[in-house]
Image 1 (cartoon, rainbow, N blue to C red):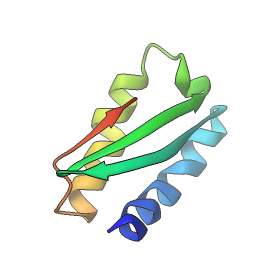
Image 2: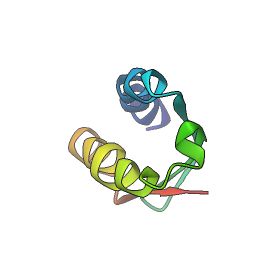
Image 3: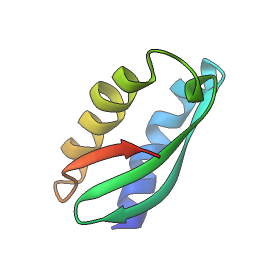
Image 4: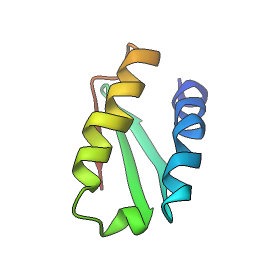
Length: 72
């Protein structure tokens, strides 16, 4: 499961890095992926949109066991 989650994050990561940000996998528990937004993404006012409409949407599409993605 963690390998699948990291594979999706690896697909998304270049886009975030192009804008000076990044995402770090922290944990997966009860269908929830916990991540830390880093760099420019860590303090960007649009990070919640990136998290929900970008990362979470792609994650749910590729890994059906994922119910949500939350930032810590």
